[in-house]
Length: 159
Ligand code: FES
Image (cartoon, rainbow, N blue to C red):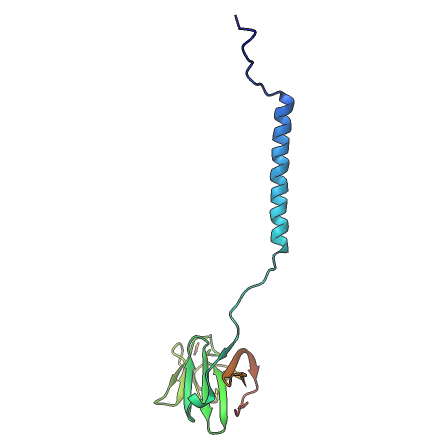
């Protein structure tokens, strides 16, 4: 026979159990909605590296030389009449070209396109000349090339 003075084990009523389940479900739904809202407030921006880069001081590039900026895929060329910047991306299928000093040509290793130092196609399947890129001089006196800004072929910069 149970002792009437013995404490009763706590029992959970059906009503309290359903209320607890309901509150938990509401809390989870509110948390999910909050997460979606916070995600909605975050800007959908694709962070890309800057398109402009420093190619160093102009005096560091001798007249008649071609400097290849491999990472940026750009040639900076100094001729007697001034500087020019050419994209190193082949206009055929986008391979990266290489300057060949012995032939004074820019050549594509993929399908054999060849370009002059003015970017004109002299051989191979490339449909267009290499892109000429915008150059400027920074406040520190360094050459700046912007790979996102194309300029008309023949644009030469004197700094
Ligand atoms: S990608 Fe350069 S010739 Fe085809």
